[in-house]
Amino acid sequence: MNVYDWDKTIYDGDSSIDFYKHCLKKYPSISKYWPRQMRAMSQYKRRKITKTEMKTVFYEYFQSIPNIGQEVQIFWDENEHKIKSWYYDQKRDDDLIISASPDFLLRPMMNKLGIALIASDVNPLSGENMQENCYGPEKVRRMKLEYDINEMEEFYSDSYSDDPLAQFAQKSYLVKGDERLPW
Image (cartoon, rainbow, N blue to C red; front, side, top):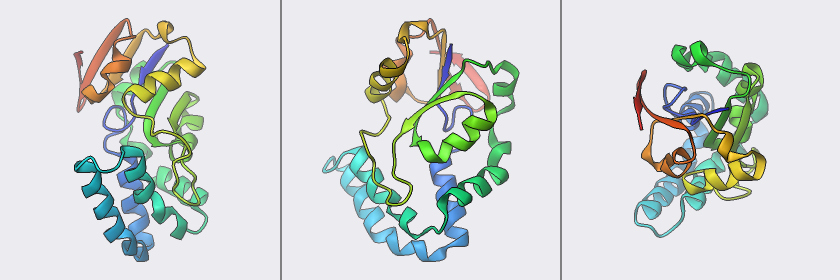
């Protein structure tokens, strides 16, 4: 099995931020969340709150998106082209995406690609993280719950924050744009 981070790895950008921008264009009233979002990001940078807490505040805007499931589908119709071509060239049926982005946001694209997903469990109606954000060491914990982590042949990520997971792969690659460099 090959395992991939999603954002900035095989998706050219950050899908959570791109989805936010998509929603902001259609629902400019979600700008009312900016003060709380900015405060939460500042608190996170000062280590006053966790990444999970910061993301829960950031995702509160989901409450103001009518039929968010339909909006996710529209988003992917417009953004599927941002999946990097090199991924399609090496895609396998047993691939696994493991991402800090919300599961409900990525799930439609994973279903279309026919591959497995582990992602952050976020309530699409409230924005609440239902468990720890799927980031760093949490990716290892979550993968071990569902898979034999020792069967990971190759791992790809754009960030050294994924080093805990990269250590379990037979081969790991750091992704910079379309370039894949040995970890």
